[in-house]
Length: 455
Image (cartoon, rainbow, N blue to C red; front, side, top):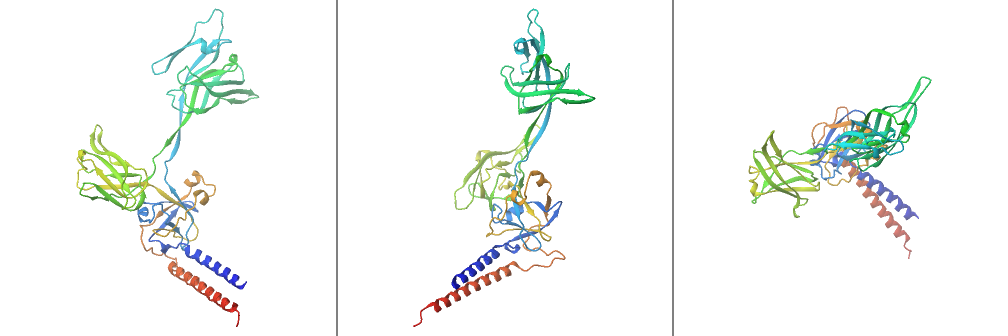
């Protein structure tokens, strides 16, 4: 029993010491820089510059940390830039045409539609009525314009002989021949004791249509329209935020190819190659590799040029890449294009922008640390870091910025006492751990000796 107790105690000491020794401290990282924060906390957003990516030891930025003045690592999450999407609302003043027909017959059987070559309605006229047949208003035809706007709302300007409810069905078409259901709607206008209730808007399914046809369930009560406005929205995707490096000098080989070595393997999505001379045209092929000992993998082909145009000079200096991690790039030129116009080439890499969202705690100044080969991923999902996260909460967060450039030593801010070096803490923890293991061994040896039978 005593041996088991000693083992449990020693195991607990081992776990505590190992966990404590695994906690990161600022001195574990090769580069640090203080931060300044502004806006509403306690969550802050920090846009990482390209220098931080180059200072990292891992392309996925697992070795990025945020520390407070007490040297405690703060909880954080990494966000990679994505294309921003927004919806742009539009309105169309529809052209309206009455649909008349004989009572008891479908209006489509009794009208003649004249269209232009582009499909625009020129006129709608009733067919010759039969003798003594009474023409009644059965509905309305709406021309929506180009027909490329997803329609989600119809606002009618209408009047009727009497108040009440008017139900109608809606059909849609792009050619005036084939019709499909587009939903149903109801108009209402009630007056009583000086008060009015009115319903003039109808929800639509958000689909495109060149023409709409409104049919009243009770044709005798069909409203007179004086205007119709159609509303809809289109989604618009903005560009993906990118970080660009400064131009990197190339190394030329005997074959006339150019190559570049990056500080680490990065998920490069674009490259920009500067064309210094006018009237340059160069078919090129770009390849990359993660390790210098493996074969080159084709990444992109294209034509780079800098040529005169009608409105001035036109240029194409960028190539789009698949975004795989590469540490080396090679550019091969088609000799028929005459080269880049120089003996060397400069290339800038573009990677998706990344920001750190962190939860501020403890004293300022906070600091960013990066550059640790042994670091493991310590980031949290954004939904965990910010309970109830949504885009509105993100835009309302405060912002953090680097205060200076990356450096290996950070001066202590005035009024803040310097903290003990994390290395001495670790040395002490390891000494306690080793002493505990040694003590455990001595106890086990003593128990074994005492348990031997005495001769």
